[in-house]
Length: 297
Image (tube, rainbow, N blue to C red; front, side, top):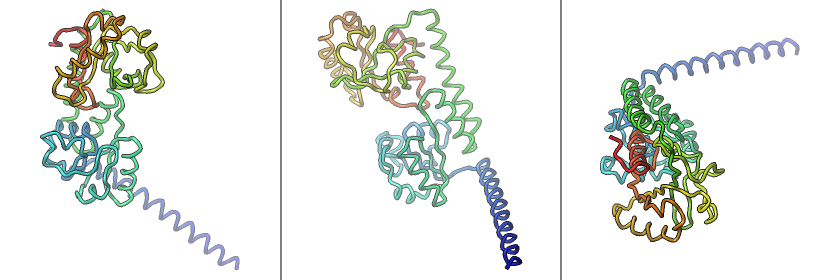
């Protein structure tokens, strides 16, 4: 009996050793393949990821995008794979991708985990700030063999941002309120990329430190914040004049606010402001124009 126990123990050790060696070999193979990876069929699960891929010069290799990106004319030839918040895993698989790129929030992370289990290559990136945008562009470039292109794209964005940074030196920062919803009133808080953009454009968040990213605010908080500039996104409405007319009517009830008294209420086309993508510098430039009433040129 003791002899059999010894033989069993030896056999178990051999199996464990072989398993460890095999796993290490598989990991090395995967890492090696990643370095040389040139995907031909890419599924992008977010508009900003899709924009990054186009900027890196491989837009023609994207085979599917979420509904939110499909509305843009340059994505009209792509398959539809559900929406941004609820991607359709069956539609993704049907697109036969050799790479799926997702964001890191829970719904898309869950999709990525399920796809990995069936052997699909997935790249998940976190983009919640401008610095993380640069990290994501760099990682995507490395993964798809577009390192030079990603480096140049980052340089281009940073150069545009530095031009604005030079213009706002020694200027007093106007208190800025970025309104994401008027009824009930909801604004962009300090822990948002919108706040990053306001600061890079030379302003400061009028509402101060917030617990939530996009908190609702009461009339008392609004009055106390005393914003000098109010910025309102048009939310896809192309008739900016009509949106501004409605906004002026809404804000006229708060005549004690400096932004209202001085007619510093701006309605902007939010396509370049609403997402963290490679056009982020254009969004900062647009906010800069609102804060300083001048071109960034």
